[in-house]
Image 1 (tube, one colour):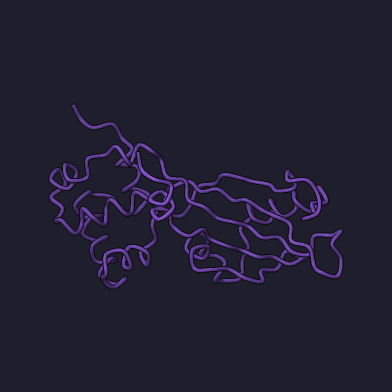
Image 2: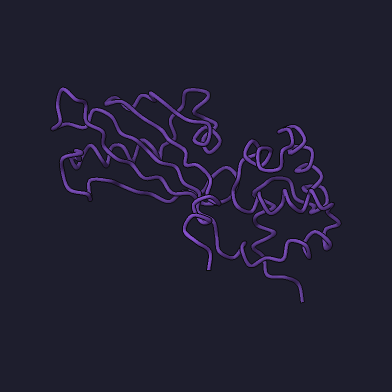
Amino acid sequence: MRSYLDIVKGRSSPGILILDAKNSLVYANGQALDHFPCLRKGRLPSEVSELCRGIRSRGGSPAGPQDSAASLVVDSVSGLPFSLRAFPIAERRSAKTAGYVMVLVEKIVDRHFAELDFDGLGRQYGLSKRETEVLGLISKGISNLEIAGKLFISEYTVKDHIKKILSKMNVGSRSGIIATLLQPPPK
């Protein structure tokens, strides 16, 4: 059995969004921007707005009960599901009202992927050793930048590997890769 430390080290960092009382974005880290590219254009996803409205309608406050948090599971751009969890953050001036809301964006990795034989898949699709490594990391929902960091290569090289994987697997997107991996193997 893996230790808790190994499990924690294997997880990717969550995306973090902080919104003010008017649902205007105050802060977004890189992981959140990977999940919601529309944030770069100043558009807030409807799921995030809905979650924040839910928190505020319940009058959630940090001094209140633990159930003042709200959560939602949605599909991401990459094809893997992720969870959104919102927490009220009170301003120091008024601990009774939630002036800000923090939203955590966390990937949900299907245990099915852990059971896949990536070496066999690499042979099946004619992938190089490095492409097979990238395929395994894609299946964990890891962004191109995170893959680059883990493999000590540039993000541009990761994109080149992904283009080759897409071509060899005859799919058009990361979502297509995930869908193909989730299909039962041919008999």
